[in-house]
Length: 341
Ligand code: ATP
Image 1 (cartoon, rainbow, N blue to C red):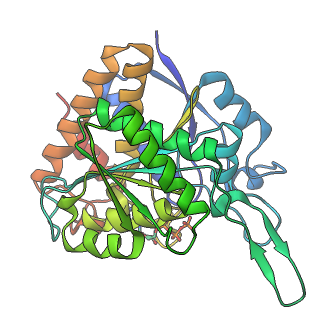
Image 2: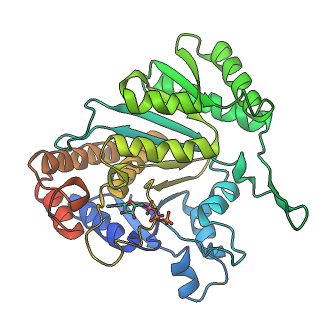
């Protein structure tokens, strides 16, 4: 039985990198049936009234799992961002973003192996903004005990399941005493109640960022509220080769949307030069998720084969331009396909 997966190519470089992922999956004989839906500016251009059309949301609700390219939201036209809508409407409260050094990709540090767990539904993404006077606008940072506890539990359970030895919370509770204070208090409580065997640390986010760029190997799993998670994810992508190589997953209780950390990269769109690895590794996470949640071990074996193939390609110097190579999107996909065994 094949798994039906909703594929949302998205905007900018999204269609190019999605095509490359589809090619690799087809060549590998993946037990996946793609159903394609639009979101973002692509949906508006196809005649939809919103950046997240009801049928796209409905398809994810029906099939449970989606692979999504980057989706843009026109600024100042009253649309709520596709990503924010998806995370809220599907209750995808946990974003997980593994950040690993890749063989053959030379960066300042070797052996980076971090996992970023980001709360995905609260904080400054609450959308609660007000024009108070002509001169004053406010944006509200929202934290709930339920949301903070839920993400802390998720992070510690993830750490325990994946053999992670240390959880570090980045915060600014010295300034945002109530919101970040709550996040911190519940992280401490969950640690003590559920996984006291895992090392627990806290770092004020500014100092934490400095330490990250000095020596990322001192961290293991980072737990952050929404906005900090967004910013620190891109920082960490820079430690291992940039936005072209870092995957992500947005997970809820019943649904999961896998997407690269990068955006639509309008500077590269249509040129056939974007690195498809970020979306391909997100798809690899999707295969692991299918194996974990549906017990389909074929998906785990396939994830390993794909990992092996792109690792070999990179190690043999077959790279896209963002990594100092000269291959286009399709040629890199081809190099991966040639190394599938
Ligand atoms: P958006 O507004 O959709 O977030 P953006 O251009 O502001 O788009 P990103 O798309 O996240 O932000 O990326 C920033 C830059 O990183 C891009 O302009 C591009 O140069 C580089 N980049 C992002 N993704 C990739 C990729 N897959 N391959 C190569 N370079 C990439």
